[in-house]
Length: 287
Image 1 (cartoon, one colour):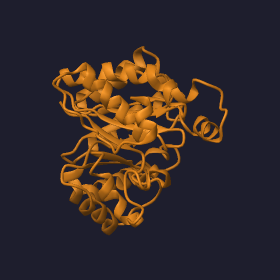
Image 2 (tube, helix red, strand yellow; image 1 turned 90 degrees about the horizontal axis):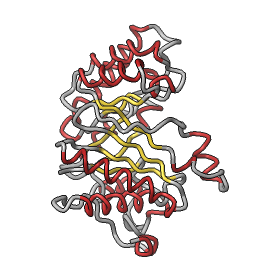
Image 3 (cartoon, rainbow, N blue to C red; image 1 turned 30 degrees about the vertical axis):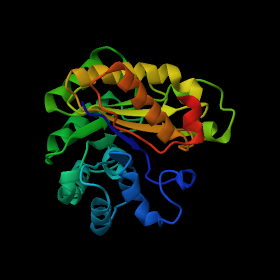
Image 4 (tube, helix red, strand yellow; image 1 turned 135 degrees about the horizontal axis):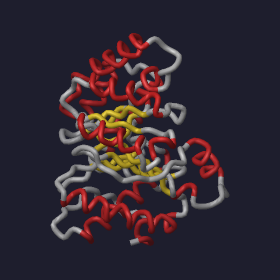
């Protein structure tokens, strides 16, 4: 029974002198982060071409059991209309080649498609999945509402992923849209995060969850309870989930992840805790 928890980043100013000492340089923090969390979303590969030497430095800095979840380049996922297909394929192959030396520490690589990629792009999405040549898992996140219709389109999408052994990324942004945006972090989150239905369906062995928490921590309880039940079910089915916890400003994201793991532990007596953080004043007030 294993759940891999991670954040959307491995350093944050608010985590200094809590998750890592202030004396550590920014380059050293990923190593300390990896002693608490077993995975991380790496969004930098979506925006830019990260040099192989930098990828290897990250690889060497983390503990042996750590697994990175890199996001595919936007030139692959966000330019399906504006670029020749052969160029998209070449960029995808090049990205896979850059990850080849890291396979021992790779979790599900993420193909994240924008809300403009509707069902007409499904064959292209499947074609990219069919090109995946690494031994590590692959996952797909879609944001167009057609893929959440609980009808023919979603059925075809889920069946296609399952046939290929590709994991669905389940986005849960319900918490940040549960209130009006009364602070800057909520305004930013509601502007940037997709507002899509949460359909927690696993299509392969490593389902990926992206939970976007509300800054009022107690408000997240209802959704954390739901996810604890679903994760417990997946564990009983022999699945190995990846859970990436965000919050609107990410300050309290580690605390939310620890709360979720505690809830799973309460439901599964044989489950060993996957996430034990240094105690903080906020955490102690919530347990």
